[in-house]
Image 1 (cartoon, rainbow, N blue to C red):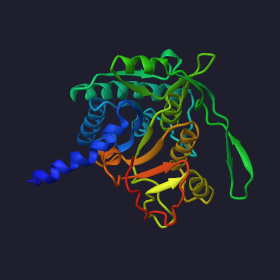
Image 2: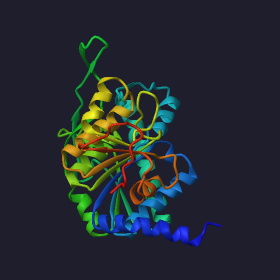
Image 3: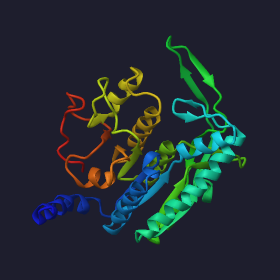
Length: 308
C-alpha cells in the first residue's frame, strides 16, 4: 500500500494549482483511443467531475474519428484525409453526424455516472459554431500551392458562446459535438481540435487541452518535446517534423494562444488521469504549447518547473 504521507503529498502538490485555477474555464478536446477503453472513459469522466468539484469550469469538445471511419467503411464509403482533415461528401457527413450524436450522449451519461451534471449539444445548437466551407490550399515538395476540395469540411466563422455560459452559470458541464452550421443552414464537419480551440478562444479560457493518441509533440529524433513555443512549432511544421494529424492540433494551439487562451496542452489520452497529471503536478505528462518562451534550448529535455 502506498505510504499515506506520499498520498498526502500528492494533494499538497495540487493545492496551489487548485487555488490558482478556481473559477477558470478549461476547454478539453476528448477523442481517440481514450474513448475506446472502458477504463480510460471512466478515468476521463472522473477527471472532469473532479475539476468541476474544485471550482474549475470544464467544457468538453469531443471527436469521433475512429468510430466515424468504422461506420464509413461499413457503409462502403472511403475515408480520405488531407492535412489531418477528413474529406467529407454528403453521405460521409450524414454518417459522421449520426456517430457524433451517439458519442455525445454516451459522454454525458458517463459524466453523470461519476456524479457530474452534463448537457450534450452540437455546434448547431444556439448557432454555437457558425461555419462555412473550408478553402484548403496545400503545398507540394516544390512549394507550389494547390487548392483541394475537402467537401463539407467547415472552417469556423464565428463562435456564439452564450449557451455555454448559460450552462456554466447553472453548474452544468457542456459536452459539444463538433458539427457547425452555415448561414444557409448547411451542416459542416468541423475538426474537433479546431472546434475546441475556437471555443476556448471565444471563452478566453485559461487552458485548452487536446487529448491525442501519442505522447505529445516529438522532435526529429522521436523524443517528446516538453515545452514548445509558437515560433518553434511553426518551424517544425515547415520542416515536416510536425506532420499529418498533429498539424491541426498544433495550429489550433497557436491560434488559441494568439486569441488570448492562457496555455495549451497536447496530452496522451491513453494515460489514465492524464488531465489531472498535466494540470496538478509540477512535471506534467505531455507537450505544453505556449505563446513564447525565453529559452527552450534543448527541445525535449528542458524541465518546465511546474505546469501552472
